[in-house]
Image (cartoon, rainbow, N blue to C red; front, side, top):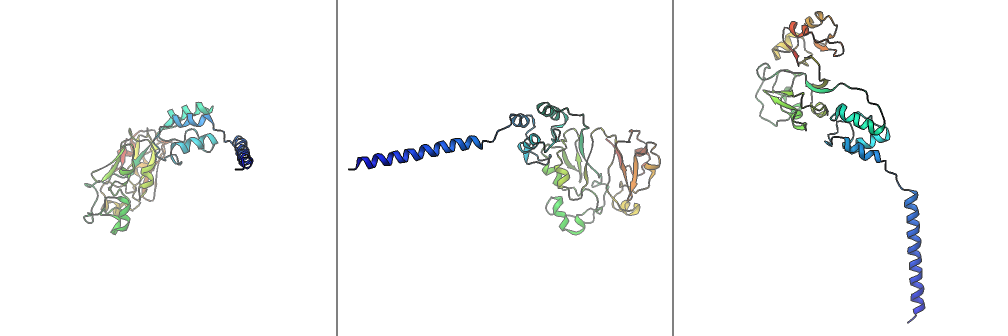
Length: 265
């Protein structure tokens, strides 16, 4: 048996292994990705709902974006100002106060006030109604269809269909925006939490057409605008809207509205 050959083979194999180990060690040090300790702290400060309301794939995605400077410290709608301030402290940034916002369904056309054209017994999903006649059994083509697509995606139990129309519980709403994304008629918008009065209608039909479909829809009469001393109300396309920055909460617009589609919140 050639012992010297075996010894040489062992030496060669060991040398190669030692060289590869040293090479990999040096390479790992040279190409090592340094982790920013702040990222873990930011992630811990975030609520962990992974709702995607910030526009990033979950809380970890947002934490990385904040560290890279790609997202602001107050990008989390669920955490609100409290979480923003905590993250601001971690990042060494002063966070300015922001107004809390909540979702609001711009419709109150429930089963008692909206005319129905036919009985619908199909799938209970608003998005599916785009494929059936008139986009649903309700005569109004602008109002809430009432089949709960928004309710199904809400992680916070903040929105429910009541008597054929979606209603938001503003105390539970975290402004994640999921309901806005899923509503096929874009009826839901973010409004200030402390807004005094809101227009609960989205119809852009002329008055007679709106009244025919819904007895409490906006008819674009303009009485709200004419009587608003703060100049906070506008009427465009037969539909009233309120500028929340100008609104003083006097309630005159709601008082003058003949259809009572401006509601106090």
